[in-house]
Image (tube, rainbow, N blue to C red; front, side, top):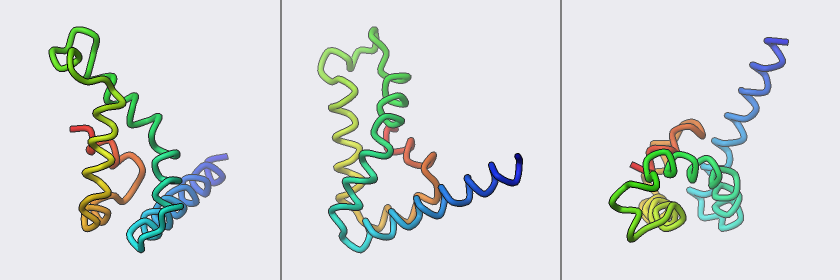
Length: 94
C-alpha cells in the first residue's frame, strides 16, 4: 500500500511540474487547468486567514484576494520556478 501511495504522490508531483512548465511556455489551457486544480485549496487558505471578524473583510472577500494572488502569479513568469509542488502555491496568499 505504501508503495502505491508513493507512486501516486510521485505521479501527482510529475503532473504538477509538467503543468507548471506548460504555463511557463505560455499555454493558456495549462494556466486554466492550474487555476481549476488549485483554486479550492487557495480559497481554503485565504479563508483561514480572512475570518469573518478580520478588518479587511469589510472590503474584500476570499475571491478578491484569490484573483489578486493569481494575477501576481501569472504576471511574473519567473516566479513559476519557485513552485516545486502544489503545496507551495499557498504562499501566493500571503
